[in-house]
Amino acid sequence: MVEDLNERVQRSQNKVEALMDKIPGIGGYQRKEKRRDADKLLRDHVARQLEEQLSRLANVQRTLTEAGDLSATLKLERAVTKLQVLIDRIKTASYGYAGLFDAVKVDEDVLDRLYQFDEAMLENLDELASRIAQLETAALSGGDTAVSTNELILLLEKLNNTYSQRQDVILA
Image (cartoon, rainbow, N blue to C red; front, top):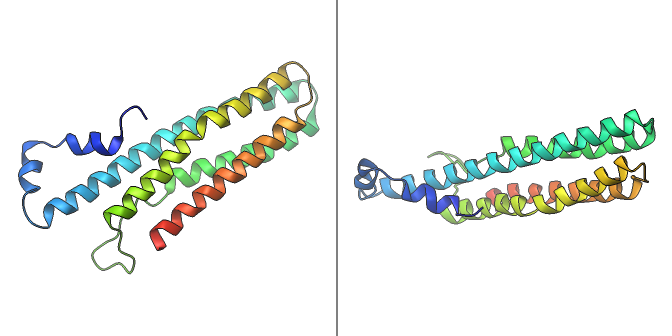
């Protein structure tokens, strides 16, 4: 994003929060909470961007269905499903919270690495949009969509696998 959400959330302290930040133990807790908030904001943004791409894919499916290309429509359904799974995973991902007595403690470094995973998803949006644009062009021109669909499916599998590594960061 243009401005790092972590920095933006940290700067948005009011006077009471700034005072509480000086109390031992409270300041660190608040910084962690703000990192979690920034990560949640970023994930929500990424999920909205992915939903826009999902909408574009639905339009391509409609175009293919109207053209009577049912085999391409069915193949594209795999990509739609993988994208929907990714969106759901991002929306429901753990945001690095660990309670006082939880077995797995989450420190600020882990929260930063979670944020980096979510930021990497944002960076991959351009490639995803480009693949969908290729697919749109092929579908609208009546061309072969098989190659574009296969490339899109591979990209979505890669994104899902990358996002799976996010959970490993919490457990490491």
